[in-house]
Length: 292
Image 1 (tube, rainbow, N blue to C red):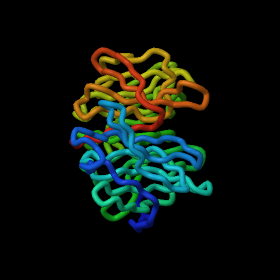
Image 2: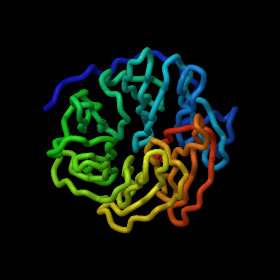
Image 3: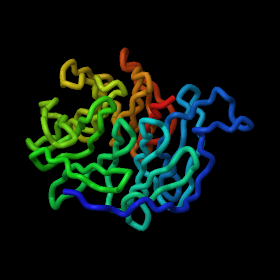
Image 4: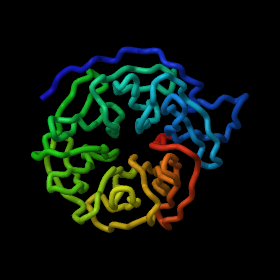
């Protein structure tokens, strides 16, 4: 099933200089603002950029709307994000080369993930009392369902190395992690426990999947191989928040959102090999640019 959506219409929103192209007069040449994230201000969420090597922060947007769930495209040329204004949610895509903003889809109200070739997105769409997965083509704006054969699929991410999706599903009554082809074929369940397994995210080489696991309000970061083997818990009761983990370009670190107080979240960096953990800056929903 496919249907056209509102095609790319350029809109105007207030943007601050994009740090993907460093300003020689204002920032050292060694600055690398490769993490985009949300920081909540008086009017809602704005987009910020972070250099994780020194915790330098630069504001990227300042708008009346609230920006949510920014995600770099794998080629580093675009950032997809949600905007919330007057109780309306829509999907937008920022071109990091010329700062333009494309209004992509007024019906998308859930986080998105890019395909490995940066040409398509996958998102969650409410379907009555259930949920399902849709892909969106940036070329022509068409939507396609991902028919996995059961309801309750959500929050998918696209493998950068193959045409497969990792997603959570309540098809068996409890949120678990599954993988399937983008065409809905070859569905494989990767987790099976009494915990809530959510927010899967592929490593850049496609060999591992990071995910959140635990009870509501107390989730930790785990990693496993893409076939579900070699599961490892990396954090212990850090209150992992509702946002995708994001792998560093070399797959050695993962940035996550942690809740440090009832109304305060921070970005934290986790070493994949050792599990060493350190807090970075106030913020949420970080995404690491894969292209360097």
